[in-house]
Amino acid sequence: MIESFDAPVGSLYVHVPFCAQKCNYCAFYSEAANGEIINRYVSALGRELEIVAADLRPQTIFFGGGTPSLLNLRQWERLLRTMERLQLTGAAEWTVECNPATVSLDKAKLLRDHGVNRVSMGVQSLDETLLDRLERVHSREMVFKSFDTLRAAGFDNINIDLMFAIPGQTLKVWRETLVEALALGSEHLSSYEVIYEDDTPLFARLKAGEFDVDEELAENMFEELIAQAAGAGFQQYEIANFARHVSEADAPATSNIFDPQIPSRACRHNVNYWRGGAYYGLGPSATGYVRGVRSRNWSNTPLYCEQLEQDRRAIESNEELAPRARAGEIAAFGLRMNAGWPFEQFQRVTGWDLRREWAGEMSQLVSRGWARSDERRFQLTPAGLRFADSAAEFFLR
Ligand SMILES: C[S@@+](CC[C@H](N)C(=O)[O-])C[C@H]1O[C@@H](n2cnc3c(N)ncnc32)[C@H](O)[C@@H]1O
Ligand code: SF4
Image 1 (cartoon, rainbow, N blue to C red):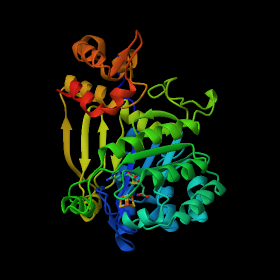
Image 2 (image 1 turned 90 degrees about the vertical axis):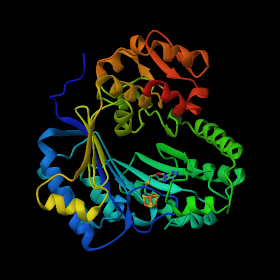
Image 3 (image 1 turned 180 degrees about the vertical axis):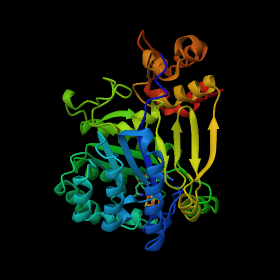
Image 4 (image 1 turned 90 degrees about the horizontal axis):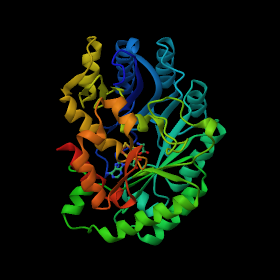
């Protein structure tokens, strides 16, 4: 039975397109800003929330960016009041992304008091030279201070983001960063290898020959990450994501994302996304996926505001895939998770039987040693997870 298309959507992503300063590797839609444009954005976002509220009962909310913590107290108060009026608060998991330079106790308490219960903090590195090289706006000291501030405000579910294979980063420096970062005792860790995104200053410097990419070193750093995270009690549940398993009582309650192989402190919002669940995406450049239609908002904050000031959603494009192609895409997403796909759940989400429709592709992956299968689920092996993008291609063609 395919999941109901009538029920309100259970997940909300909000994009906040502002940062204190632009990091040189980052291709997310965001710009250094303050003052009036942020006020205008907060009003426009309030209008966009009003437009979709009747079709939304968020069990997970994720404010990403950009840097949501850049909004000041007054702007957050305004936004939170709007969400309360629209009955959009009270999600089981509500994450706000923060930059260590823009965390204050007042702001953290305000968020916590209104139902935000998870913070994701961009740390990237704890090496001062590398932080400078990435043009991060914060120091290593600010990371430790902000982490303590978040704990003092009552956050017991914190993620930190780290990057590896940063130009000039040695294996020794990466090891030290991991030791110090894990000692913070966060509940979740996301760690990405640097991606050289087109049109970023870091990409231009790579092209100019200022440094080389060392794939073997990156591979060793990934191995180090897996080993240290496991040693610190984290369970890897997606290629770049690790979480603690706190207790059974804490396990995700919503059926779409519950899976005994996923640790309880996994990011439920992202699990819903990888498992093909619906979500609204609001704010400039945000994508949403509602009733089989993928939509994308304009990546242009003034234009976004202008549209909403005229009571129109600021959607640049809508795309509706044919049902089988959509199911293939959902299969590919889900395989990024260590738990892979329980067959029964795949059928419930997509209406297709993975075993029947993709039997050939699955057995090819198994014979390469990239995947395994039993009577209940299909999942990539550690070797397969390393080539997850290539494995995904099998389901996308
Ligand atoms: C929107 S940012 C996180 C919050 C906040 N903006 C900050 O940076 O402090 C999301 C995360 O994506 C990762 N990221 C961004 N660009 C990346 C790139 N080019 N390569 C690898 N990871 C990247 C970083 O770890 C970053 O923390
Ligand atoms: S990594 Fe975070 S802080 Fe840096 S530019 Fe991107 S969104 Fe902004």
